Length: 239
Image (cartoon, rainbow, N blue to C red; front, side, top):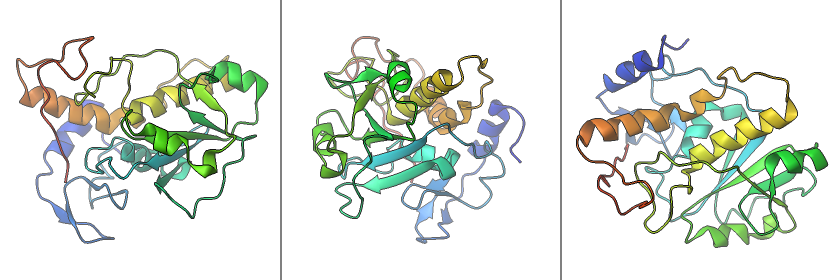
C-alpha cells in the first residue's frame, strides 16, 4: 500500500539513495530497472499502487531512445497489466489488427480519439511510438503497423524538462501522450463519468523527475515557444 500524499511519496523516494542489484539482470539501479521494467526492492511499497487502463498500451521503442531517459518505461511500472513494451524492429511481433488497434500519431488521416471511438467502439489497443520526432517514421513504417489507423490527441503543452530542439511545446513526452490518450479514451467510453484522478499515477515518475530538475536548476527555466532553446537543459538520468 502506497504512502499518503504524492509529496509524501516523493520525499520517501528521495530518501532512497543506495543503488541495488536488479533482481532480474543484477545491474545497479536506484528506483527501478529501466531495462527489466521492475521496481527495486522497497520502492513498490511507497509509490502509487498499480492501476488498470481503459485500453491496452503497446509501446514500441526506437533503439536510439536511451532507456535511462525514456518516460515510456513509467507506463510499464504504473500499469503493468495494461502495458506491453517492444523494442524496434521487434520481428517477433505479429501484425496489429486494424479493427481493434490504432496508432497515436498525427498523420494527415488521423482522427481525434473521441471521433474515432464513435465510429470504432471496439478499440482495444493504442500503439505509442517512443522515439524522437526525427526517427519516428522508422517506427511508423513497420510492417506490423500496415493498415492500422492513426488517431491524434487534442492539443496540450508539454511540461518536459528535456525538450527536443526546434519542436514546439505541443510535442509531448511519451508518458504525457499516454496519459492524455488514456484520459481521452475514458472520457469517450464513459461520457457521464466525472474524472476522479484515477490515471494521475501515470505521471508520478514524470513529476518526480521534473521536481528534481526544478530543485537542481533554481533560476533556470525553459522559455515557452522556444522548446529546446531556452535555459535549463540539464539532463537527469536515472541509472
